[in-house]
Image (cartoon, rainbow, N blue to C red):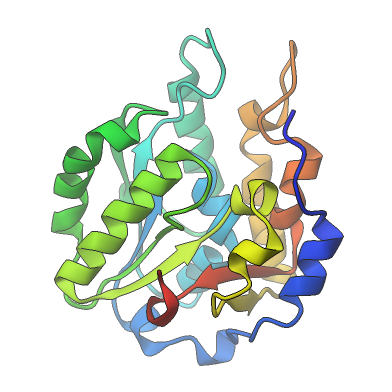
Length: 240
């Protein structure tokens, strides 16, 4: 069982001082062009950026989901888990307004993305146009798949000269306040409706929330950051 290094209360105190990224003043690039969300595993996009995805979709913006793996290795000896998680992700994203046709499944090997970075780059590259805004996990997010996705996505964004935004998940559990203290983060406030959409989406990931013979990946303690009334990002200008 993972025990966060920093309590949720401590994180919320620290993040209460982070500047707001108001929904009413969302950067034009997020609204005018497609937003490409890179998800290492089914559920990462919802955990880290579900509110943002719902806002973009219900404001009419195009959102594409790059589903890098099917998360088939979340548990040992779980035959068919990848198919289950892919279905869960499709259902969850529907709650956020994303149609199945806009979920692009790469089916790279779960827990081994770092050895497939060239393949990932080749799959992501054609999806990035001049107006695309790329959103991916932080490249230091304490999971090798998250970090690989972050590295590749950031490199491509720089190459194509498009905007890039990082989201977090494992950082809230394995990182420290000092780790983020020098980064100019930004917080996106979520309305009650957006937060409700996000919680509906999270509930679709049943395989990660419940397990008959052992602890699930997503215990309620680990879900605490995804229950916040805001989401935290690192934007292009501050990406390191």
